Image 1 (cartoon, one colour):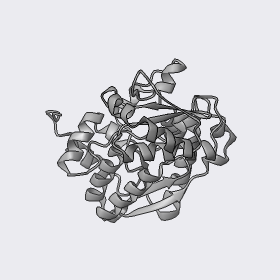
Image 2: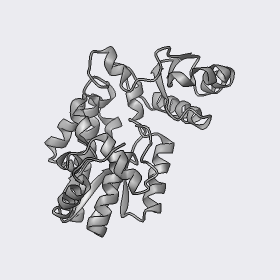
Image 3: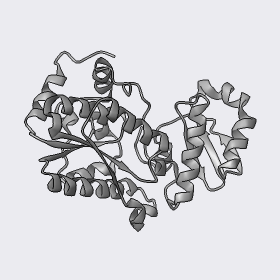
Image 4: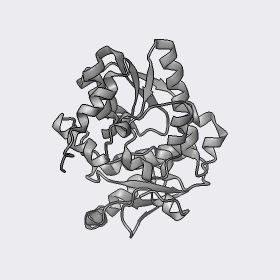
Length: 272
């Protein structure tokens, strides 16, 4: 990875300093952890990382996010969001992400007002503008700012500067919410999220760091990079046994391999 000729991190620092105080919507991924690290540097106690935990957040993602915040001595807070009580979210149409972010940003804006923080920030970057991201519409509705876009960061830039800061998330694979594993039109349920979460956690534990378990009722369709196919097939009996224990009666390997946003492709949405 190569940095841009212009030091965009200086621009980001300038943007953050001008905010005076800010809540960062923090998930533990590379984008929000990098943003929070710079915000903490520039604003100190006036920067607050807020983690939103719900059934759609994988347990190991949750634990990693807390561990990083503690290790970095960030000012942080954990809240609960209630998207699972919203029928618009549960019915899981192509705008599901909007209702999730609408709930999240509403809670964060309320919290900023309660605690006296001036802004709410997210970790969106320039690459997100080319994806199908209904959550960005929710950000606009709540006047949430995206400093990484303002400072013209791409995903590659974020990983480069996160590595320079020795953030262990710098090369972490993207980890969207568990609801994204359910095909559009499949109701989001606690049971389905639990099955997906446990299955992916198990697969990561046996050396599949990049994995999606697509939920088709009693069938788990597993997406992994093609270079991992041979290893998967050598472990198929154990994998099938474990996923059976989590509630899947059938386990299949997707022959096309891992594709981020593959369920979006199936309904004609452009999301690489």
